[in-house]
Amino acid sequence: MKIWWKRAGMLFTLLVIIYLGVKPDMLVGKPGIKAESAVLMDMNSEQVLMDYNGSEEIAPAGISKLMTELLVMEATMRGDIRWDDPVNVSRYASSVGGNQLALKQGDRFTVQELFQVVAVYSANDATVALAEHISGSEHQFVQRMNQKAAEIGLSGDTHFTNSTGLSETMLGPYRPHNIQGQTLMTAMDACKLAQYLLNHHPEILKVSNQMQVSLHQKGIYMSNTNWMLSSIGGPYAYEGNDGLKTGYDKDTGYHFVGTAERDGKRLISVVFGSDTREGRFVETRKLLNYGFSNTKVN
Image 1 (cartoon, helix red, strand yellow):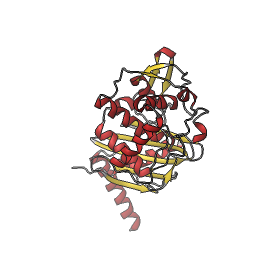
Image 2 (cartoon, rainbow, N blue to C red):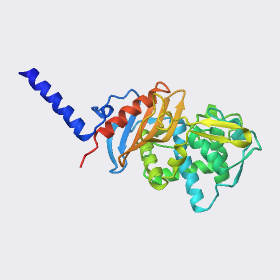
Image 3 (cartoon, rainbow, N blue to C red):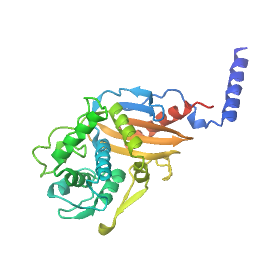
Image 4 (spheres, one colour):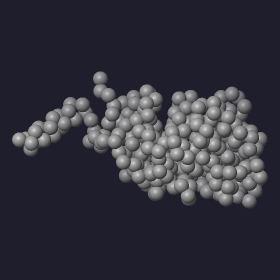
């Protein structure tokens, strides 16, 4: 009798799947996440669908560039800078480590060129150059980053110390003395920051969704570090994914803030502290599948 009921239940579930058009990869329970922390939010309702250690501080590396991107976009909207403004690369900007483009002191690029390589390739030298261009110095830019964090309601556990998220040891020999300490962020705050950015500047997705960007005068082409873009294809591509930001720190691991939209529902996911480059995308898939499986059908 128990076997009969079990089979009947399976048949009923199959019929519901067929009727509702639910995709098999979306039939998941609450996922177990192999990372230090993770958060999932339904952007439309602002409901947090999952919070796994979301209030724990971690060095977020390139994820902190979401705040840099936000401030650049706000500066252009206010008219403080223009997308076609030339930006000079300083000695300090040219010397930072991590993911960079080997820009040279004295190189000149437009705000738009540097912004695109920050958003798509997470280039640290381009990030510092933009920060210095907007505020005169990275130190002053960082002050604005923390002011904005407070304005949009991020917690006191999130604190920016530079524009890139790099540790002090990676900032190079010409790091200004007033740029000190480690940027820290929580997964929940990263999610809130992404939500604010997407709500106020949805055009960021036109940049983050690009498969490749280039600096024509240097003949450099950079592929997107987000392997989940639906346009890229491959084993990690995810239908509806169009952003948003990757990060890596040698001590805290691999990070990813992702977003995807299906049938008018947009989710924001955060995975902090995955052990591998690929793992952050595997765990993000779990979160997004869970979120879309909870879509209410009218």
